[in-house]
Image 1: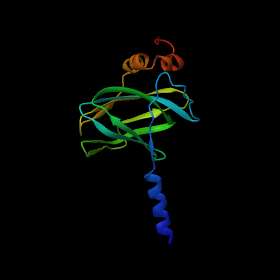
Image 2: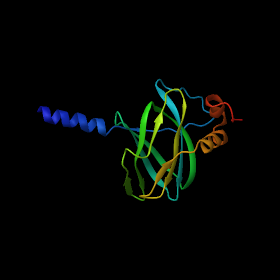
Image 3: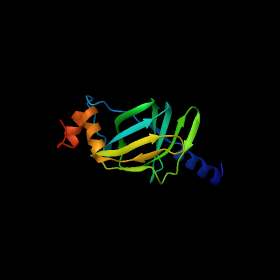
Image 4: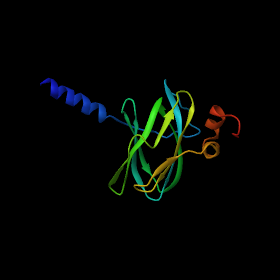
Length: 155
């Protein structure tokens, strides 16, 4: 093999790396991995979404959220520390791709982080943040995690 082919294969392997995201339950005994933070992420969609792809901007590692049902759904999961952007989602076999400098959030290790609320409306989808909504939803669906990481305002 020549050097160009080896470089191409290495770059392809780096960019094709996808990791599946596992949603935590409030009752699960989870071990927060080293250099990871928790992310509270809400989806608000009018349609079933087969996948949402997040990209960490420095490493370009991709993380996949799969099977998002129609409606509003709140989930908590772990990600390594870094800056993440929504790169695409797939609905009805159609891929919607976004500028990876726009719909972004930062994950700080050993903390609970607001990943925002992704309103999925085809090409006009947006990621927005609301601290009161974040604490309210976290307390409603993940009261134990809320108490552990936020304290005040959690039951």
